[in-house]
Length: 369
Image (tube, rainbow, N blue to C red):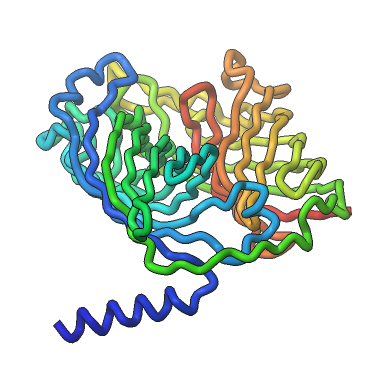
């Protein structure tokens, strides 16, 4: 009991002298798996259920970005779920970070949206012998994405708020290993949050509405990863095929919140050397030279900036593509984190339509003239 009291005292002290207001939240969730491909109907049996625990904060000193984004919350959480089909899908455990944006507020009521991203562990996944019915995902570890729309009611004269949320959950391994159809869930949750500190915000307007001094930015990006592909679902080719992206880009910085840009991209994907012969359950090499599988394109997109973090969304078109001429376009969605002013880490999905090719994990450099 003394240890519990001591820990509570430590947490309260940290919150009291911190530059942020801290909140704790617990939610109960319920939902169902939503089959999005033919053949996945059997995966959805019963409703899913679980719980969600998170902590989040907002800055007391609201800087330029917090003011422009209407003082968002940032935080971390864990989520456990029974997916409603224990023999095939098993359970999931996710750890994630999130940002919560408020776009409507009246008195004690707020409407918000919360964007969550992290990693997920599935206790069950596809196995040709042990679990052949699980045609959705072929790995224990997966990416976790959750988009919520919520209603918040703050109790009068109390540090407690009631929360009602609904949204979409998506699990995917980014084609590291097939199958990778992904799992989608429609999810609803009811929760309560407690504000552990209450300090009035101080606005810092020194950089507000200041136009960027440097409008032109040039970037270089290099990524390296491995991926798996397939011809006949759900069997993959085994994984471990080298994939890489090289890109040179130009961005026009129209404000401190965003950039529009163009990128010259070159892609190398060793999966394209092979064709999967399902009759003999074997790989057949149909290309020998790298020039036959290398693809090059031009992409156009946008970078949304929040402090050191950026959300990128690009769409491109191939001008050199011998191996799959019918795939005339591609997309890139993901995040960039600026470790230093001129160095960023990149994590994005390179895809065609709704099919992920591979994860573009790598490093980039920014040069501003």
